[in-house]
Image 1: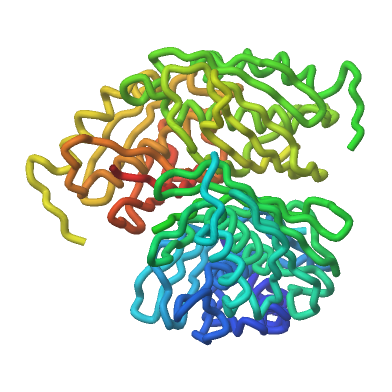
Image 2: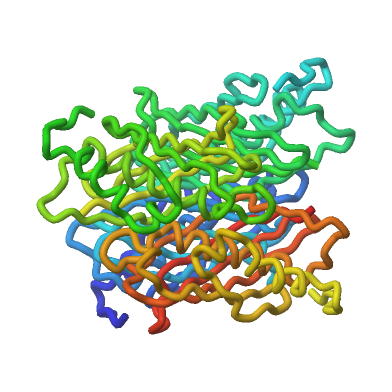
Length: 141
Length: 141
Length: 141
Length: 141
């Protein structure tokens, strides 16, 4: 899949959109890198993100995963004139506790259809341990 | 399924635990009611929860769903001496945009095993429209 | 949701299509009833469907669930001239062993969009015990 | 993760168990290779596996994925005296039609806990195209 990478590429849209999204800003999710059908996002550890003790809440991880899936699905796609899209569904498997750690989500497109895009995402902690895995369906347009 | 409902019931644990959970407090999730294998939670609308415009971010809905699944799985179970548990996995289907609306999550246990508990959750907006459906696996102990 | 229920309704298409589908016939899945956004299918027990001993294989249950989700999504929808559609994704939670038992899948639409339809399905054994729960996304057209 | 690979390894159990499982035999699923936390299974194309035309039914793909997840979770684990286990849940994303093609499922463990094992599986057609992706939770013991 080779898609245009000019100024009107989905990556430009995402680089601007993600940090301006209120919940993303509230949690502190940051854009790492955006490639063709790929997105890397970071979530620095803060006590406000925990569920109990120093364990990051599964909901924070799901928000990170959802945002990364969306970003990967947009990156590489030519954005339509009126930017529209939404998550159709998201499945997250929690593999290990994320304890007092920054998190990195790496999402990549599994398949991009005309309207429907599937992506998977791996969430690792600061030591590189896989703490969660997600797979989602995103609808563009 | 009839389970003990005394003072050491999981509901008491949940009624105290949920509001004290930092991310839950950050988003503003509130306990509605807790029954035997059932939990109703509320998420009042705030601009900080949106993804763009007035649409609540899917991650906020996933956090609400995850918390409700956990609560339902604990409610009715006799809590072990050392409270422990974690979400194994969660699938959320997003059915309709949640636009500038308070949300209510109603979770119920599908099956409670000795260690593994499955629950489903319906998320409705203030008009009663189903905006998301979740199903999760939770591990107790 | 009120949809046409005439001769060109999706139910007529499903009543004819399901029994003629080779894998459905191989497993022995039968149509129970088809309503507006609802479908009930049966899978009579046979030793060929098991994984070990008398336990029905999770794959047979997934096939039953997938077929029921598809049927519910078509039932009530006006079929396009060229019948087309496909499962986008399916999540099945296995709740209890299905041992030497006939199975019944009851699927209902959670939300029908223009192109995307979400449905959930409950699979019960001959005693009415819930043995599996599924939720799927189906694409029409 | 380094696990014993002796005669009492889960791989030996799987190599014997999989072909003897009735539904697996009915569909024609074959063992490719079994490694430490990995399993490769094949499903040769047959007209009986289709849903319509030459398209393999999603249920056949789900059965292949479920069996591969189970196999990967057993491979590397020391089997308990009494072999027991079951799929907790399985999510399959269908990425492209599988038309008149043999299929290969490659599963690998994402994380193996004491009782709970998570694995993902990629299903490719004879040209190497990814036609489905699955992720599942399996319970040992």
